[in-house]
Image (cartoon, rainbow, N blue to C red; front, side):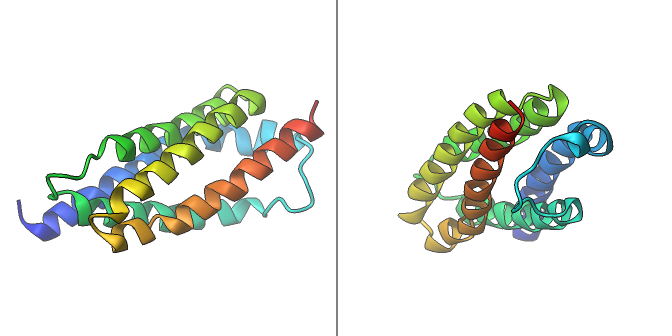
Length: 151
């Protein structure tokens, strides 16, 4: 497969996960999510879409960089991608921040494992996941704060 086509496919896969997650998110933003108590450090709603678009782009490039390395096990990349979309389903679709908090902990761990598995084969692929790991670290704290404020 042409390398540019492979890069495009890797990006489309990751951005596609974001699109699927947004299907569950959009219907809850102006109804359920808006009435939740949120911490003072909750970003404005408009910031999430562009941040995630960039993060999915970086994830796609990262995937592309390791895709053809036979020794790299992509299992953890696919697991974290699944957990990423599943968090949106739980938090916004099921409207269950408590269960979403437990799930995001597994997401956070799986991203760390993915970074660790990539770093020995392509450091740039691993480094491209650092902003994602940082944002999800923030999301873990935000999710927990929402759970505690809405008991």
